[in-house]
Image (cartoon, rainbow, N blue to C red):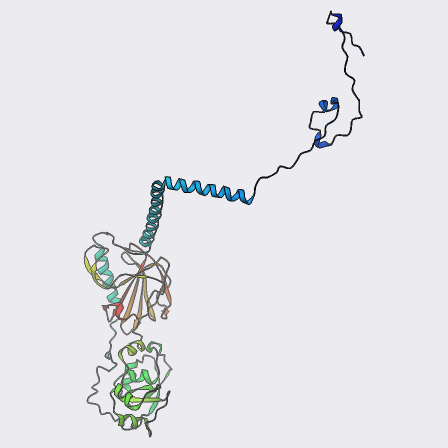
Amino acid sequence: MEIISYVQDDSRRRSFSLPDIQWKRRERIPSRVRSASITSDFFSPELKRFSAQKVKSDFSVRTFFKLVGGAASQSAVYIKDNAKRLGIITSSALLTCALGFFAVSFVKHHINHTGPVLLESDGSADIENLNRLMAKFALDGTVDYDETGNLLDVDAASKTVNFTQPVSYQTYKVRSGDTISGIAKKFGLTNISTLISVNDIGNVRQLAAGQKLKIPSIDGIIYTVKKGDSLSSITDKYKISLEQLLDVNELTSETLTAGQQLFLPGAAMDATSLRNAMGELFKLPISAKFRWSSPYGYRIDPIAGVKSFHTGTDMACPTGTPILAAMSGRVTTTGLNRVYGNYVIIDHGNGYQTLYAHMSKIIASKGQWVSQGTRIGLVGSTGYSTGPHLHFTVYKNGKLIDPMSVLK
């Protein structure tokens, strides 16, 4: 084929020849290859085919440990070269954490515990006013027996007691207004522990009108024989006569069996057992975890900042902790005082009253009868208080006493 050029005048350059091309039928190109230049492929003397190949990874266990070893080696070198700087950074971090921990602990302690506070100068006067208020509420209940249960207005020495006759019993039905001492006097007894022991009374306060009591003919207590007991060991312990013990119980043999009950003539309950039966041992008004923050007696007053007499004991614990009645009784008043905040007063009879102060919430209501352990309020920090706690005061016959002397 010859092509004529209209540009060049040189006849020798007016034409040129194309190389012979071996035309082949174009094969169908796969879609994955079409991204290549179609024009170049079309005019290529031969159509070249190609496909993507998988990339070979050079990862292996050996390579992994090599990398780890290298990193560890570099870290060791870095730590060695910067040991002083890293030590300072670590110490600073530990010190910061320790300070943060102590700061949080201090804040929690401050929130949950009482501490000193400066109040107005007339704060102490408010305390005295409430003390006088408590004295008015405290009953002047007369106590006609001593710590061992002996009746005070009975001359036991002048009374002839016959411990040679067998003990006998009669039944008495309790009437409204009766007292344990009054019943004892009515039947010629000289010690209230006799009725308590013979009738196995766990709490005298639970006696009710209509209840029946066994009344022995003489003073004494019931004793249950234990394994290993003998008549001589019992008489030595309770300071009684062996002959009287045999006569009163009509014993024909000195052999005793465990569980056998004996009447010990002239014996009396010990002081602790008697107080417990008379309901004079109080339970802690807080059953949750707490801290004794201020005792009863003279101290540096956290309110006035001067030495003063603390009328109760303080039990520090978190706000909302349940406050329990230390002993059964009747709620005589509930109120709000500028010093003691929300407070409750309970009359327990026999001259005992208790005050529970600084409550966040009062649960009991005036006139309500509460049993020992009944929830009467929640711990708080109302009134003049620097932190949540319970102020617990005990009165006996109109006079303050140390709460620790009655708590068990």
